[in-house]
Length: 192
Image 1 (cartoon, rainbow, N blue to C red):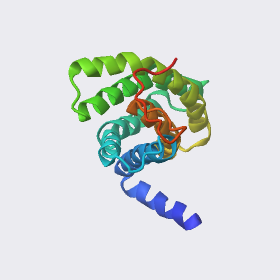
Image 2: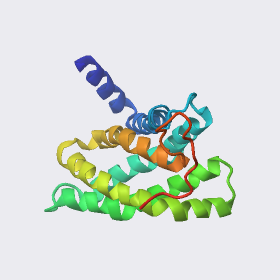
Image 3: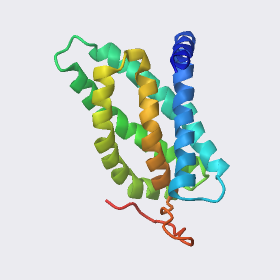
């Protein structure tokens, strides 16, 4: 296990931003695949859907997360009393609402949905997902800023993202988890 960490450390040192973006994109992909196979129990993986999540991670979520951690570290730093709390709150008040909104829009755009459908998706999915974002990510961010070295924060975020994105992929797909052999009913809105 030590050799894996040492190898990863070397790669992160050589191309930190690219490595971090690709790791985040991969976590989005894995989250969707886990959602499809374990939660939705699809007989076959929807490769297009999984690819959409990877592309959103590679082109949108990953670059924004890496840039955000770099920016917030440079602006807030470590010297401010309560810096950890300030960073976590900034992330949840400023960054995460925009990140989630963009993710919902891109997911629908990649599915070639109409603007009317995109707006409907925002109306039905945004607030329930943002509520879960707050419940899940505030503790994650507090741990991240307290215990994880700055250069590893995007990757720690990516690993935590695997769990959150599994949930998010299931919720954004609009498919209920399979409880019986024939349950694949579409879900028009998310419960509060």
